[in-house]
Image (cartoon, rainbow, N blue to C red; front, side, top):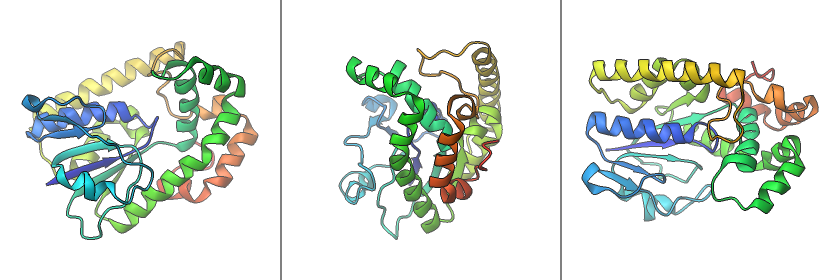
Length: 251
């Protein structure tokens, strides 16, 4: 059986990667992720190559040969109509994701040339967000189409992950139809609730732009983007914001 997870960059995808690893161990399934290194002894495998945007071939060449938990995959792909797999799509308020992407790519993400960082820093968060808006819209359109075609798949949100982890984890388990030991689930959820509570409180006192986990709390775009930038994004993503449950106010 295949359990697929799709998301996009700066929607908590590295946390999602870690949680899928925990779940794979909890239910004794292999885990395939672009962020894994191959470790057959632990049933942990790297996804390579990663699919491209709306990739029409990746499933046939790569994905269909995998089993167990697969993901997070960060771009929509073309899947066969008769696919027999469970799936979840994990999203975040795209306005927050675009804001977070600027700070990550400019200050903390590994493997980015200094010249690029300086160019983005000079550009500023508003121009950066608008420049990346088209790619974000394309991903959201792709994920909406995937959900429309598979109404039995589940939609989960970053905001629940960081503010109501127990609810979020329950949604993930329900979406996959997996039932780990209830005591292990409860302990894991409580530990993450405390971890997020502590991190959010610390970041509200001091933001850490040099770290991958910079802010965490939802609504950061309201503090970082100019009103006219938010308005432009709201207009461009009006249908997608409504479909994925994000009001124009950002609240």
